[in-house]
Amino acid sequence: MLEKVDLSKKIEKAAYKSLISDLEVKLGELQRQARDLAIPVIIVFEGWEASGKATAMNHLILSLDPRGFNVYPVNPPTEEERFRPFLWRFWIKTPARGRMALFDKSWYRRVLVERVDKILKKKDWSKSYDEIRFFERQLAEDGNVIIKFFLHISKKEQKKRFKKLLKNPSTAWRVTKEAWRHHKQYEKYLVAAEEMLAKTDTDYAPWTLVEAQDRRFARVKIFKTVAEALENKIAEVRDLKARDKPAKSSSVHLKSLGSSILDKVDLSLSLKKTEYEKELDRYQKRLREIEHEAYTKRLPILLLYEGWDAAGKGGVIKRLTRSMDPRGYEVVPTTAPNDVEKVHHYLWRFWNKIPKAGHIAIFDRTWYGRVLVERVEGFCSEEEWKRAYREINEMEESLVNFGTVLIKFWLQIDKDEQLKRFEARQKDPHKRWKITEEDWRNREKWDEYKEAVDEMLFRTSTAYAPWTIIESNSKYYARIKVLKTVVKEVEKHL
Image 1 (spheres, rainbow, N blue to C red):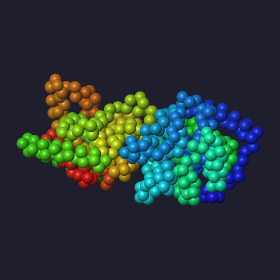
Image 2: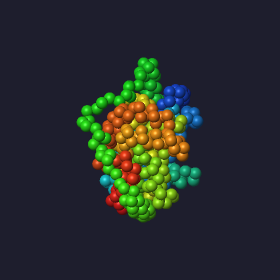
Image 3: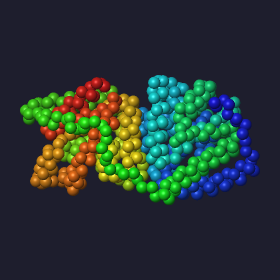
Image 4: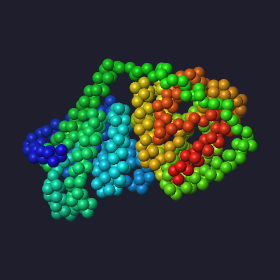
């Protein structure tokens, strides 16, 4: 494919000046419109060394308001980045609504440099194609404009540019030993690049192949492509606003999932206090040992807790962490998103809290809020929460592919037990802070929440990230089952 690209395309200087001048004005105006419409924009520059990526990007941003974008040069991952899933460092850099993020190289390093240089095994880099498509589709469906450029030059032209750079003392540093090595591997990179383009060229994030032998032609094509993509998205958003299309109803509808998963839970299971104390001591000691072993082996652990209000999540987490080294874990309480989090993809705030290898993150409520409270209370559209099942499964698959031990708990109690605990909290001045008006309002929607929980368990319990339902009418039983499950699952990976 790349070998057949016509690299002889050129634009004369006079024509270039006229075209680029008009495009610069146009891009500035489109940036302002995208900002006003809260459209996030991602622009990716990939291509050969010395193909003009940095220069083209620099020319592009000169026409933009610098307060509205961030530029991210992508280098080999740091130690901090290597200790997390490869997309983590890109997720946390995705733009807020109305802003732009420009990447000088990107997540495609995974299937180019790391593939050809054999930094990764084939099974690892080949899996990355799916993760990249998931990543880009999730962002596009959330409203991001994704524009991807691959700047193409011939091997002969690359060598010519290297020599020119070497003649100038101020640019010679750019031609590294690695650059020459990659030049010698041009044919191998060609194969990798063609496969990358074929496997990741999608409707929601298409590639634009830029004939970059002539720098003026390349710049004009890049400017025109960005302008067209922004114009199309702006028109789409304005059309939706003009039609004032209401969000689809997010009320809960009965699903044909068969009998309720929650109705099958045996809530009569219990544990005597003497047995509880014995088991608690045993598993807490083992957890302390496991925490140190996981750190030594750089094993990331992610524990997710969901459940009914007053089901005992806090008590379970307290018993779990009581004997652990606080330097090795973080408890992440999830509340309503703040103003910064609201202007990003809803998964963005959770990617920011993913534990690094060797550490433990304990989430008290999680990304499942999207298909629970946001669904029932109408905080997102029906289209958004239905889409979230797939997005969550994809996120969890990426985490597990990285080697994360992912354990998900649903703490189940019945409606009578919840009422008893609510009333006990109201009577106890030391626990009264735990009960809120929102808890009572949620209780009134018990059946709606139950329907949402059943569907969540059905659609997101996967082979790689299954749900563990904790029978929690007995606090003693629930705490020991959680500790026992954590010990058992982590030991499998040590």
